[in-house]
Length: 258
Image 1 (cartoon, one colour):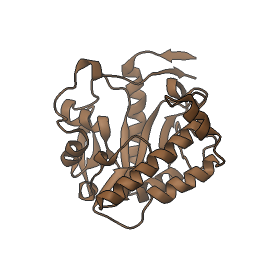
Image 2 (image 1 turned 45 degrees about the vertical axis):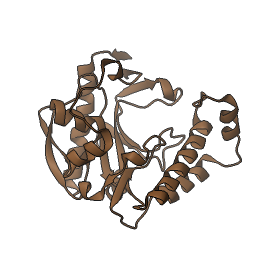
Image 3 (image 1 turned 180 degrees about the horizontal axis):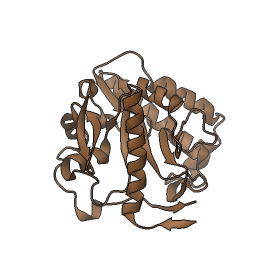
């Protein structure tokens, strides 16, 4: 295998995946939004954040579910958390099957160079109920991670073994998580819920994803949410100001051509 050491080569692979996903969504009337740090990069830099090395997109839950069931492309494959065996992650990825990546936090579970695809779900408008949902979500994901990780993801060894040997299966945990986070009842508030990390502060108005607008990224036209400025302010605050140099971090992985 030849290691991919040039970040531009890695980004070209990711851009190929993003273009494929964009074309598929356009052809099948599916909605997606460039999001997270990728969106900051598009707005602030016209492309990647200079030190960034990944791509994130959001999809409304209904579009996400259809996408992970139906997407296909010659060189790319969607990793569907509902059917992928021993799947480490809690959201979908679209991977380049010609490559392999080794990530520090997922030892023993390797996938190709990828972009992340996150569903966006409705969350309670009531603040107290929302906090209850997020607190339970964080606990369930923590237990799940302890059960599937090859290394201890917690600071506490005792906590790790306690959660790892709880008499509940990963599939049972995933069903509980899905019941908690997937709501067909529309509210005025949404959030990406498929990780332990995003907290209550990451919620933003559902009106922000009511429709799509065009946005430029690396010289190409893609889609993002109509209220992207509001979303970025809710999520990141002053997103136009560069962070301190010690916070300009990249992901820890090695990528190879097969």
